[in-house]
Length: 350
Image (cartoon, rainbow, N blue to C red; front, side):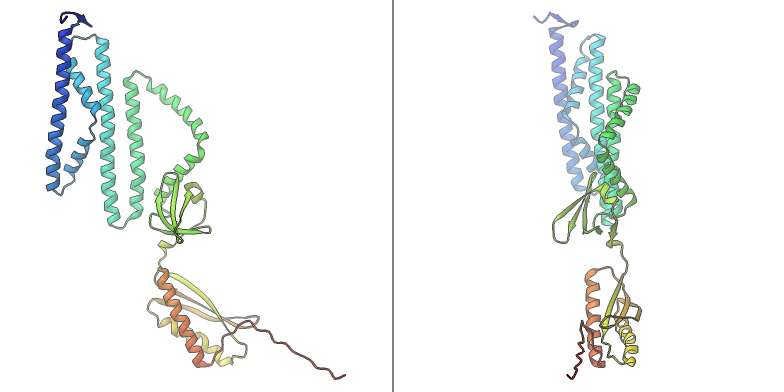
């Protein structure tokens, strides 16, 4: 039975080749496990990231690569036809290419996450968002190259295939132009940075904090708690107000006094308001003027700047200014106006 021949090899030679392949697989897996255990022990004792990277890449080593290598080693003990040898060789090459793509993805993720973490710690969220997009683009390029190399090893004419994919890509692009529009809008957001994660923005009548910038949508957490989801293309076509990049806040307010106010008191009002605003540490006075004759009041317009973008700080300062204006006007005998009507009654003797 052992002397029977299959593909120019006896049964005994096939059994020996299978045993060699199995032993090779076992030895390779044992070596992988031992090395991985040693690296984990070393990585726990060191602060460097290189050993962590090597450990991660070794963990990413898939079983199909080990099996392909073991089969190749076992086939060396056989006298196989050139066609079968070529098939085994191609299988091993494809396994190596696939494993190389997995290792490459691990390297890209390690590099991107490393720099992304560093930029977030430095407070540079804009650059961190850019690295997130680069992660996807680099992996897409890597897997595309691996796919072309695999097809080339399988005997496909890659040049013709790429040309065909180009024509087909145009048709697909026309069919999914909305999705591609959102994808390119995402890249525009990442590269141009009109806003980044953590910015407080207003889009039309919607406002909130940016939580996530994805390939198709951007998610914003509104002040009332719900999550708002915007298409990236629609978002870029809207008018966006980014309050995170505000350095100072301009405040304009108007007050009205009654028409019975004496002229000397009217001339005193801008000076009173100026003194109150200039007494605030985070406020910078701009102007205060008698603006107009209203329907029932004499109106004064005041402009000042709050030296902080924080909304609560602005409200605290504006509240204290309003309270002090009310006190000073009470002390000076200046009355605030409110909507009133005067009715004149004419009496005629009959």
